[in-house]
Length: 304
Ligand code: 0X9
Ligand code: ZN
Image (cartoon, protein in one colour):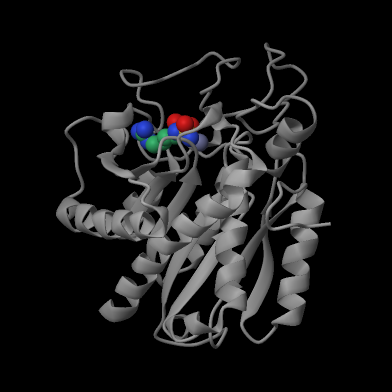
C-alpha cells in the first residue's frame, strides 16, 4: 500500500493517484500523458479550483527523471498531498493550476528499486541490431535544446551514465514531456526535482556565462524559494546557475525555459548519503520543499 513516508513502487503510486482523483474529482484530475520506453503509462496530476477555470496560471513540477533519485517522487507526493488535503491552499488554487508528474521514469525507477540501486537512466533496450549491449538513455540529456554540442558534454558512448540518446528527443519519456509542456499554454513555472546537493539551479545549463535575458527575475524568485525552504527547518539551499554546477546539454529546465516558461528551475534535494536518503528524510524534505514551492505559488498568484 502507498505510504507518504515510504518509498513506494510505481503501482502503489498509481493507485494513490487514482484514489485521490476519485475522492476529490471536483479539483483533482489524473491523466495519462505518455508512456515509458517499456510501455508503462506516464501520469500527470492536475490540481485546481475549478478544474477547467479560465484566466489561470500553471505551475508544472516533475520528479524522478533519474531513476535512483527516489526522494524526488516522495517529495512530489508530499506536495500533492499537502495541496489536496490542506484546505488553506484552496484560494491559491483558484488562480494557479498545479500540474505534477511524480514519476517520469517508471522503468528506471523500478530497476533501481529491484535490481540496481544506483541506476540513473531509462530502460530503453534499443534495437536488436544496435552495436552495444548497454541499456538506457540519460533522459536529462535527451531534450532537443542545444542537445549534446560536441564541445560540451557529448557522450557518444552508449554505455556512459550520461548517454544523451541517439538523437535529440529520441526517448518516449522525453517526447511525452515535451508534448505536454507544449499543450499547457498557461505555464509560468517549471520545476524539475532532482537529488542531490540542496541547490536551486537556474538556466542555462548548456554553456558557461550564458544567461537568459530575464535572469535577474529568475534569481530573485530563486532566492524567495530559498527563503521559503529555509523557513521550514533552517536548511540553506544555494542558488546557482546550473552551468556553474557543471555543464550539461539537453536538460529539461533548459528546454522548458527555451519553450517560454518563465520560471524554470532544477531543485537538487538533500545533501546526504549519495542519492540514498533513508525514509526518515521523506517528511523533512517534503515539508521544506513544499514551503519553497508555496512561496512560488503565492508569488505567481499575486502576479495574476
Ligand atoms: O546532471 C544532471 O542531470 C543534474 N544533476 S543530478 O545529480 N541530479 O543528475 C543537474 C542538471 C542541472 N544542469 C546542469 N548542471 N547544467
Ligand atoms: Zn538527477
